[in-house]
Image 1 (cartoon, rainbow, N blue to C red):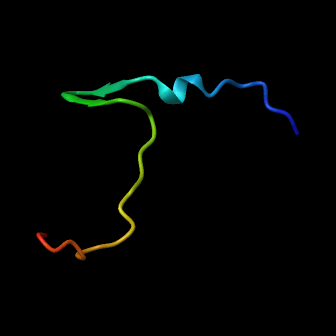
Image 2: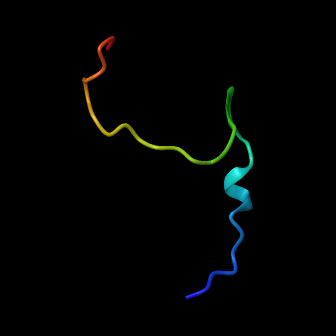
Length: 38
């Protein structure tokens, strides 16, 4: 199966309010309460 859609939009910056993301890749936390400093 061949896709004709470009992945270029994934690498563009994005702003949500005051937060600016350099690209559109985000990942949810995979653990809870395991950070040494909380």
